[in-house]
Image (cartoon, rainbow, N blue to C red):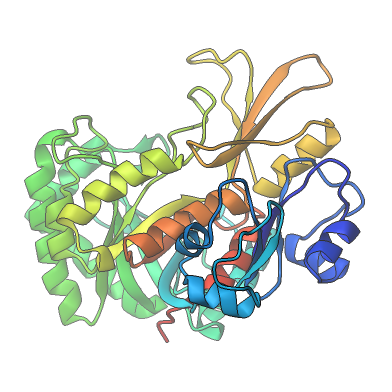
Amino acid sequence: MQIHVVAQGESVYSIANLYETTPNSIIEANELETPGNLVIGQALVIPIIGQFYFVQPGDSLFEVARRFGTTVEQLIQVNQLQPGAVLPVGFRLYIPQAPKTDITTNAYIEPFGGEVSEALQTAAQRRAPYLSYLAPFSYRIQTDASLQAPPLDDFKQIAQANGAALMMVVTNLTDEGFSDELGRQILTDEQFQNNLLDNIVQTAKQVGFLDIHFDLEFLPADLGENYNQFLRKAKQRLSSEGLLLSTALAPKTSGEQVGQWYEAHDYAAHGEIVDFVVLMTYEWGYSGGPPMAVSPIDQVRKVVDYAVTVIPPEKILLGQNLYGYDWTLPFVPGGEFARAISPQQAIQIARENNVAISYDQKAQAPFFTYTDGEGKEHEVWFEDARSIQAKFDLIRELNLKGISYWKLGLSFPQNWELLNSQFNIVKNE
């Protein structure tokens, strides 16, 4: 699979010719609605086996081989080169496709307004082939230890038809947000815990969940050990019922990180107790904050570098956003919140406003600015093929279990094309 960044004057036809493929294959892979009007800086996936690399100043075969995880000998053979040949700048090298590796994938799916929209159901149907787990969000814990269920509609049938397991997401979420008060009740009242686990097991058996996933956030900072003890109790009970246990963890860079979102999440203990964890490595750029990349690779790497020191890598799913944000400038703390958009929407906004897309190399994320019809300035950060490839590279480098997406229903076709071309999806049939 090739990633190509559109330059001035290029068309789908010229790009297809460059990579010896067809315009239609590019249009379909990228779900291009206006193929005759590409955006400068737009990242396209080109559905070919392997990829091409165009030699840059200072390149050597050794450097190119190292970058793409192959050997000098293989590059010489497949490109019919002479050993020791000097490569001219712009020379097109073919890079063979690397063997696929196994990966576990999860995607949360969040119905709105108490019902599953047709678009959300379609998203589940389209993406379930690429998933190990489908995770309806969420079963809300009530003050009497009962559970308020999300609408499930055909999610079970969709998961089963595609060999994906259902993940039961259990939260301390209320209409006002994640509740520290409810969190304290969950983690300090043993009878409450027993009743809660009874209700979880009953629901899991009735619906057909395989994994119980605790996403308990904004917990009182002094309850870290209480959370650990609760997870130990839950693990024992759930294992006896043939159920897996996983947790969502706030993005910490050290065990001493302060703040109510972080302190009760003990990475080392979760890594020891549960079957796997999801690192929520996104929301550096968030709707109420200043414009920046949602999941900048430099910040994501800091979290993962710490995580693998205390959690086995084979238990870690890297969290990944399927969305970006459109901020109205100037940013004012407490002012207007940014609008969440899909990567496809971001490209559409750039096209409609005739602006080029830039790319931040440090964050490994695309962005652009534009002026709307009312004269207001905007700044947009989102995800594209390059930014998601940086996350895939990190997963491979550190041998992580896989990736977890927040959330389905936001159009990002390049992600699924790249995922399918590089990994074998572990199924839980």
